[in-house]
Length: 249
Image (cartoon, rainbow, N blue to C red):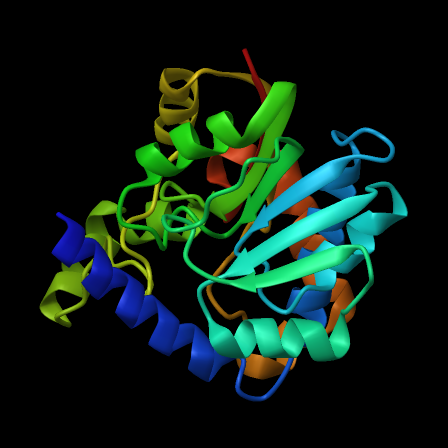
């Protein structure tokens, strides 16, 4: 199992080093995603809190939650991501560390652990939830987002006629992103969190249509994507991504 995990980590590191080679993520969808993550996080963290950021990426969310948090320890598997985070989103109250979630250890306990778009990339998400619980203070919270396996675009592809057309074209109806180990439904994430010793506090959706709409032109049109994000929030079970906050019990 450890050897398999190391192979997954190596592949993820290579993918994200390439992703961050040009700097921070940008564009309309990236900006709306950042704002969703920040706003969702601020609902559940106390003032002057200590936060652990699993998979901090370019550090945008990491830095912006300091409007309420006192300090953040932020880790990422990608050396390039940490380099970008330190360059564009550095702050005296942030400690950036280049390591894997599995290898990270700390004697300090945190008020919250955040992990946005992370569990679909790790080899054993159940163990990550258990680890997060052990790193939290009493009544600490875990805040996360992940792609919804049962999103609308996948449901459409599963429709009888479309499913058979896609098969004839050699396309997999349930294909997931190439850098994801696995994708989950809300119920699956909920079950893993409860098993790890958490109580669900909130569940929200974002983005209704995850496939590119009309190519890059519509993807960069603010009002189109703003509407797309809003519609996803109205129908969480069919949304492209799910957001969950849960409390340690």
